[in-house]
Length: 196
Ligand code: HEM
Image 1 (cartoon, helix red, strand yellow):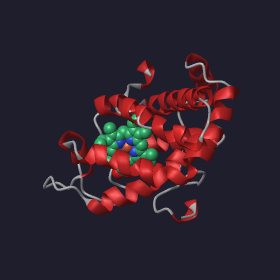
Image 2 (image 1 turned 135 degrees about the vertical axis):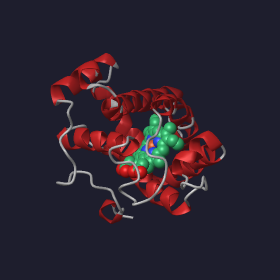
Image 3 (image 1 turned 180 degrees about the horizontal axis):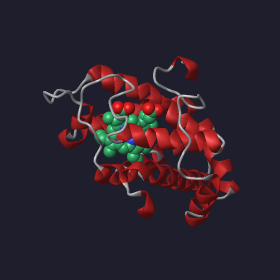
Image 4 (image 1 turned 90 degrees about the horizontal axis):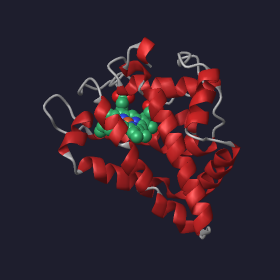
């Protein structure tokens, strides 16, 4: 599926507001997680490696969420039943996110869409994109702790295309740093701006 056909995927469009985090502040975040051009290079390589494995990765992550009631509740209707069309709609954007994480230039458009993803996990926009009735916010504590499974479980997929242990490790470190940067950007709406 081309990215233009993904319902609710508004990357780079007028529908996305400007991030409250400036590119200068983002540079400082990159410095803080030791994110360099080498990481960009290894993210591109990860993009090549993961490109045709995206559905398998998502099967694993959705299996993880689906098997934990405390997580799947965020995809559930107000009666507590998992909403399969909500899960499916988000899955398409999640697939594109894997590719964006690896292949996009982390510029103003990218920064803006990170803020949008944050708002979609927060009260401001959760449920709005897919027009569903579900719990109104993803709890902050799970946004942070989810970084570990999304990082740990990607490694076997990075190993599948015959790269050396060193290359796999560099791809994995770059992925972890990118995830930390992104989730840090996503948590902006959760905090008082003067504390962010
Ligand atoms: C939406 C990734 C944490 C539940 C999304 C999207 C992505 C994503 C890529 C789609 C963004 C878009 O609309 O383009 C992640 C990552 C996380 C994380 C990388 C942490 C490392 C969580 C947690 C939950 C969760 C802990 C709880 C189970 C959801 C839900 C949506 C969503 C319900 C849809 C929100 C809406 O109504 O638009 N997530 N997520 N996410 N995520 Fe997360």
